[in-house]
Image (tube, rainbow, N blue to C red; front, side):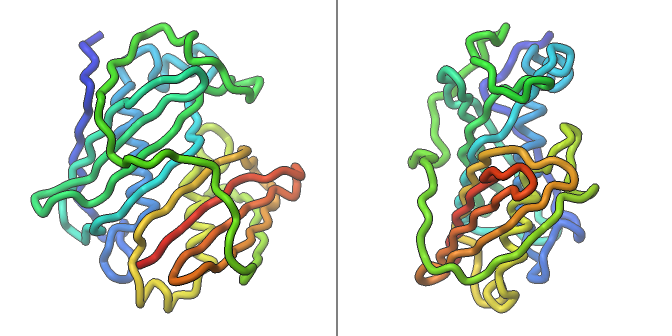
Length: 245
């Protein structure tokens, strides 16, 4: 097993199907890039996907926030650099930055939890059989706190979790929650504005065929709050805050 580096970098060339109508990289694709580099950073250790699968557990993204400085466009190449910031009891904290020759494009902070495959309950990280190297560096300075509702209820919709929403852990992939929220906003908003930042707090997993009720609350000046409620399981599924500029 090779030595674990404190940081991991990977380059991505933005392809046409990863863009939106402005030829900007889709925010959900940026999230997918981040998950890929996070997974590859730990891939050759005892806390990577294969090793944890054998131990009957897996990593779950609990909270994530991305600040967009400039969304790159079609055919640009961007570099994602990620590192582990700290491990504290139940949570592992991971940071990431997206850059290219023009400078800093996006800053990402995230919190992760280890979950039992069968029990679907969180595990204490002291049980990890490895001391993962910590990098004393922050991408975003603010903490990922609980999200508090604000604004006026302005849109409601219901979505069923289908085949295309489900990932290799047999639950809805976290990028789908972002798609569900963004798709509830009027198209004209995206013509007039750009995404400033977005934070998602994942509260409970969503399984295939679950029915999700999504409420959108509109604040001032492009500020939105979303809440997803799992009607099948009678439990809150996620909360999301979005700011457009």
